[in-house]
Length: 280
Length: 237
Ligand SMILES: Nc1ncnc2c1ncn2[C@@H]1O[C@H](COP(=O)(O)OP(=O)(O)OP(=O)(O)O)[C@@H](O)[C@H]1O
Ligand SMILES: [Mg+2]
Image (cartoon, each protein chain N blue to C red):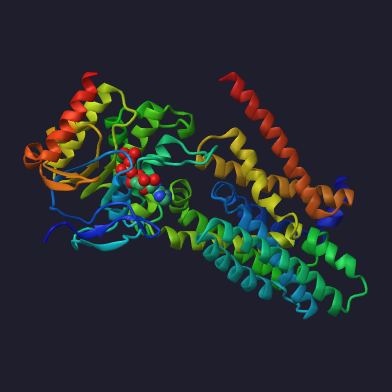
């Protein structure tokens, strides 16, 4: 087992994949709590479908650096969704459903019509479930992933207190003069970036799992924002790393293996939380 | 110029007006109590003053001195999502966020002030507890401590003593009065008319009839007399 691993680790792309995977897992876990609690999770879900549509366009255009196209599309949609979501609840929800399902259908359609590839269902499958994309990233994409992940982490740390305040009590934040709308916009843009990043790791259908599971797991055990955030980051990184190693050794698809490990971590945390709760 | 000048203000939600046209002024260092029946629009007025909802018509003029990071606010209700992981200390500290501007972290002086405010509210032992697991009165004190952290010039309180026990209520009124003596302007909504008339120097009564004036004027006015007797009667029953 160790031998197989060391053989794999001699390949540069495997090491890159591990580094990128860990960074993506770290950045995607940070906003999980905000996403879960601020009812932004529906935006996150919608955006992952948009990212799929973007990916479809990018592969039809056979761009080498797909992220260059997907990123701006997703960010723009994040801003649009946030805007519509602010008006009336129902209209906002409908808009999200429309955009996300529309993007999914449109993406599959153009892939079907224009794709030059002989293995269409394989392409679609890997876009949805990210089976191999983490290993086939170009060095530019690796570079972009690293930069973006670091940017997300830095933004999160710098605005940590603001994000907490706006998530906890938006009205109070506004009343005392914090530009809550600006921070909501920032959060939406960062979520868009995270989704595009996470798409490389687990594919567009499984993104929400990567973002939400670590936060939910941490919330089972800890009761304050800081510990939950730190714990979510640790869980996410550990699960992503473990998942990738397992998938290399067992030859399972990367994305779904990582998510399976995340689910296992959630089960363990729920159990721990229940035991701690009983002891109190 | 007055701190806050309100002219012909009508408040409401989505163009449906709740209040009559309001005209009043708040000078720096004053203590204004807003009284009136349930549903008369007191909370709505306070939210409008804070800029959380738009006035239906009329104007609110604020003096230049009033900037971000100088306003403290205690909402009547704070809807906190289920399971929100937040400790008491984190919430109290979040009162400082506006005054931080773009500075990412709280400084030592702010941390000290937060501890003092928690001490004042008697929640020091709860500092590391989860907000969701506190009693209603304890939660109210946490939010009051947060409001105290946020304020430097003006403090807006929407029923600050609701849910507090008698001792903390008395302490609370004394604390607000002492903040007012230190020069902080107070705008408070209260159903406790005897406390309102004891501590405040101005009263704004809203409802079917509107009154604005000093506390003495209020006590001598028809509307004030009838409202005070009404409450006294209620207490004697
Ligand atoms: N979000 C809202 N949208 C529409 N109407 C509202 C909303 N909140 C309150 N109202 C209405 O506005 C009126 C005034 O409400 P408000 O909360 O300002 O009363 P209040 O004077 O603070 O009462 P209380 O003493 O019970 O706190 C009420 O008739 C209420 O039904
Ligand atoms: Mg009210």
